[in-house]
Image (cartoon, rainbow, N blue to C red; front, side):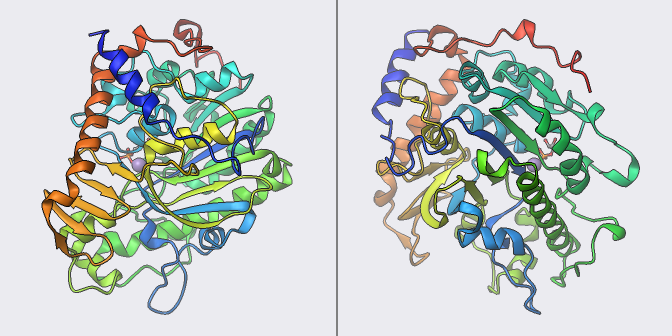
Length: 423
Ligand code: GP9
Ligand code: MN
């Protein structure tokens, strides 16, 4: 009931991580561009094919700090059955998705205090871009609840058969067609672009790639490298276009892998990919790493070892923008903060920290991959369970109705209408 919200607010407040002055407000007033990298897992970053070819040469450069980009190599997706949409949900709310069913479909009419609504109040124009129909995964309803003013869906794109694959627009066409819309937004803007074409089962139209498929004895895994390479090229071109448009030095760009692309069904091939005898449950948990890159103009980048997950991104971004979210109900902490908590809870009950991986009830030492005494994991399990339980209470009880952080104004959902947008 509504009295729970006080406990939850106190919990969130006591876990707040003070911003790091080296990063705080470094992106104040800048545009924000999120790019959801479909099914991209971190194992592919800096991976070399047996003949030495890199799969993602552009993203690999970003890991060295190119283009003022920070790469988080120990970042994990925390999605459940809502997949892409669960990742979106966490990025914008810093709440967990549900353990049962996609929150986008089940709780699209809840009250939220999401990033787009917050940015609207800071004078930002807010827009989502997705190369499929707006009702897909109930986005049209959820995006209104999140406070998105504009939603560029299929009707804004040339959805001809050369430009599309199973889930909608191919990445290169999508990004190319998105650029003019992005340029025309009123600055500063907060935007997100959902890439789609690197999606299971990853087969590509032959004319879209000259990259050699893998030879790992599994068609899905063989095609994955080709398709990931295509996405890498698409993102490289997009960075060039942002520079040409004069947007690159005025924008924080966040690239993130939304969830795994290769399930445990492909473990035999994955063992070949990773040169291992087999993929153990411990290995599989480590494979839930997804890349997170943050481009911050004028801030030196590079690869950082901080452990974190999807719920940590909103607090990180808000610190960069110089927006104080201490009074918000959120379950992540700023990845750049010295007080950041390196605890990553998953919806299946597993927990990964910088020291231990708690997987299927066993506790492993990250450094050795060996099992250690179960008691070592206890404090982390307790903390993770509390976070998940509180987040569930917020969502199932629609508790944000009963609490408004100072300065926050809920979006007027009845006034948002994605039909009236003009091309
Ligand atoms: C993109 C996405 C569909 O619209 O939601 O694919 P999935 O969620 O399975 O990645
Ligand atoms: Mn996805």
